[in-house]
Image (tube, rainbow, N blue to C red; front, side):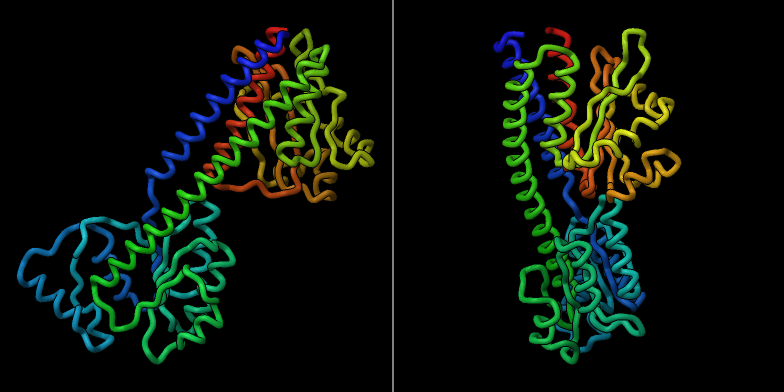
Length: 377
């Protein structure tokens, strides 16, 4: 294959990759996060916050303005949200927890579901469970990006105590009781906007980093594929580059033979060559009936729980070597899967949807490049 053909193949691949991941990033930014978690042991507070934040509307009547004035100048904690009214026209998505432990669990579940909260209102006193400061400390161990508003009375934690527990950082604000409706809505807007701006900045940074890495990978693939003399060597070169670029610890490959049957290739990708014999023995025993399923679709599949493989011969090897994820990457031409890479990683793959989209697009474009190379050679 000529250098010019390879150059055009990889140029097209890079353009498609860049457009796809930038569109994914834009879509993620447009879908701004307005999810708020309210952690308070008083049910009426939850009801009041929902009236303020869950639906839009602007107070117009004199009675509503009088309510707002009363809230603004409330001098008793029990009066602070006595008659809440809607004062902004933007809606938030609220979730409730009535104890600190419940709040920590909800944050954990939100991260696992790929739907993190932008910010949380956290009361300090929530007997009989852990207090709000300890709740925030535990939450940040799970989601360090969560913005927080601490709802506290003058008799609760002092500023020095709060700093001692949480550190002096820009992730939390303190809302003193009694507080009024406008303060609640302003804090909700400020912390949510801040979360989204930080998230947007991180997306731009990750996009630039991945585009740079992808260019480097395409350059390496161009050099490697220009040197190969056979289909076998092309598959091997692509596998080594994929394993190195993505920090996969182990990998192997399958392909369709001339009769269309799936067979294992004598190709293995290991960061520890000394365990080749053990790895080869484990993967060679994998039933082809299991592998055949991954030849039915051109989609990349990620298994994030190796317990899914517990009935297969490779399971004991994966457990022994602390494998966390398995990735099945088919390379197809004209809708038919020609060969399949199977990689295993000891690191947990980030569950962020955007990251997974980037990874999928990287592998898809490499697959396209390899397929075109094998077709045109």
